[in-house]
Length: 399
Ligand code: PLP
Image (cartoon, rainbow, N blue to C red):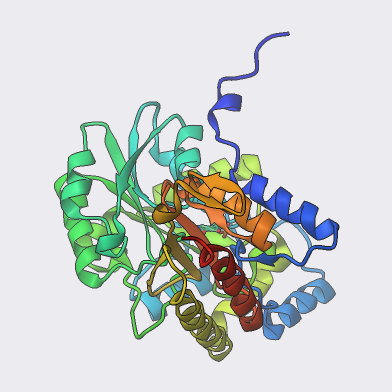
C-alpha cells in the first residue's frame, strides 16, 4: 500500500479524549463523576433563539444558502460589531462558518504558507497549533506566566518573532486561563504587530463572559493600523449557549480575504446550517438581558469555586476574570504519593482524581501548561461544591 499523506500524521490526538473516555467508562458503571471538563455552557439555548429556529423550519428555510452565509446574518453581524465593539464592517468582509473553529481554519488557510511561523500564546486552546500545522505552518509558542496573570509580556513575544513570522493568535478572554487582556495589553500587542508587520487573529469567542467589572477590548478597535491587519473571529457557541448549532464568523480586514475564505469554504462544507443561521440573526438582535443573566450565574460559580479551593493544601488556583475556566497550579503535588500512586505530572494527577476522587479535570499538558489542571465552572453550584470537596479530601490527607 502507498503511504498515507504526511498530513495524516502531523496532528496530535486530543489528550482530553483519554480523560473523557475514562469518565464515560466509570459513569457507565454507575459511578457518580463530577465533570469539570465542559468547554460549553451548561445552559439550554435561550427560548427566543429556539423559537426562531422553529419559525425557520415552518417557513421552509431549509435549503442551501450562499456558502459564506446569508445576507441577513452578515448584516446582523455587522450591526453587532458596530454596536458592541465599535467596529465598522460591510457584509462583503464577513464569512459565516460551521463554528469559530472553521472560521479559524479558514483564516489559517489564507494566511499560512509552508514554513510560515504563527505565534501562539501558552497556555493555549489546543486547536491553534494543530490548525497551523495542518496548513503547513509552524506554531511558535510564547509562554504567558501565571505571575503575570497569564498575560504575555511584550518582550517575550518580540523575542519569538523571526523573518518567517506571519501572524499572532490572541485569545481574550482566554481558554484555558480565563485571562482578560487590558486595553494597555491589547494596545502594546497591536503596536508590536505594526512594528513587525504581522497579521493578527483575534479569537473573541468568550468576549461576553467577563466578570468583576472587567471589559473586553477588541484589538481591531485600538488603531487604524490594527483594524487593517486583524481578523476578528467570534461566534454563537459560548455567549448564546449554542455550541451544537455550529455558527461562527470572521470579520476580515479586506473583502478580498473574505472572498478567498468564502471560496475555500464553498468547496469544503458549503454554507453553515440554514436554520442555525436564521436563528443566529435573532440571537444577535434580541435577548441581551438573557445573556447577561447567564453571565451573572457564571460569576457566582467562579467565586464559589475559588472559595472552595481556599482550604486545599499544595494547589493554587489562578483567579482570572473571564470565560468559565480556572487554572490550578498543581506543581507541589508532583512526586507525592496520592491514593497509592506517585503523581509526576498533571496527566497522572488527572487520572488519580478521576479514579480515586471521581472528579474529571483537564490536564494542563493539553494546553502547553504542564503544571496546571483546568477546571470549568460550567456546572451547577452543588456539583462545584461536591467536586472541589472531593479533590480536597484526597489532597488534604497528604503529609
Ligand atoms: N476558540 C476557543 C478559544 C474555544 O475555546 C472554542 C471552543 O471551545 C472555539 C474557538 C470554537 O468554538 P466553536 O467552533 O464552537 O464556535
